[in-house]
Length: 353
Ligand code: SAH
Image (cartoon, rainbow, N blue to C red):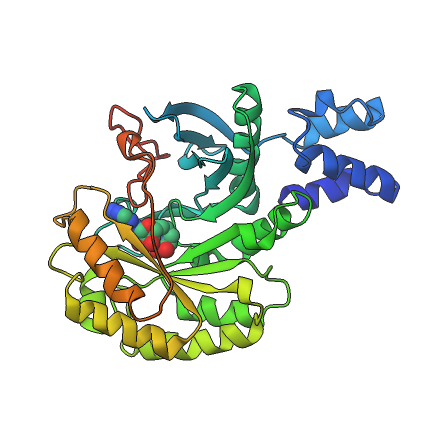
């Protein structure tokens, strides 16, 4: 049974005019209201039915943790079945906000360096729970009188987006449709699940958002040790897929990104850089985003700042576009790889019943 908000909304609104349907949708997703009660333009009877039958938000706030630099806020949210979800709001220097959303509670990918993987997969998030992390933060930005607005979304929180393909796709359609976020302002980050990658290039309903693949190593054995989901022949298949992707989304602004987490002594040598350069050349249109390691309780340590800079120079001197990700929210355990659904006291919120 489809119990998504969209289908419940369709039930409540069946028989209403297309004008009313648009009005209700605009009320939910336009970002101007905080509850059905505020939507004075809807007839009272309809408003009361909506209020009774369609919860305004599918997640509720447990706590917000602001970073010391006031550039990141981690929200611990609770789902209706009592699980904890973490999302992060980040502010850049131009007062634009990005929300980093989770797509699953926990994650089954088990990457060696990531805190979320240690939990294992608890369940997929629904499209509404994915969308509502952004709707929650829109309300938070307004309530806290933070100036600026949410312009960007990254699907880089807990979970593997392509392991929850349909719900993620529907959430993307809501972001890019009624919520009005541009497709080039949304990035889906994936461990590189090939069936999911293959599916999205052929899927007419998949919005043309940006894709970032967590590559992290251009040597298959190194990658297998870091990321156990790496299949034999993965790198060759990724190169082949990237050509399909470039064909399906030919515009330059749909460029593909490879994320590359730098771990000391694991994937940060000149030889590793050479392999990455060779792989990038085979792909063609790709940017590299180097990610400094955020500490988790894994055995790894990040490459030092000099090594990161040196690695960057190796890549760029070969004419490949490369950026270094600025880490935000490390002091509140909100940076990449640190989300584990924990409160500050370290207690985990999951529904064990
Ligand atoms: N499952 C998706 C998205 C979630 S993680 C994916 O694998 O891409 C978002 C990014 O953070 C990924 O590139 C991931 O590899 C990276 N990451 C995980 N642990 C990290 C850590 N400890 N420090 C820095 N980045 C990390």
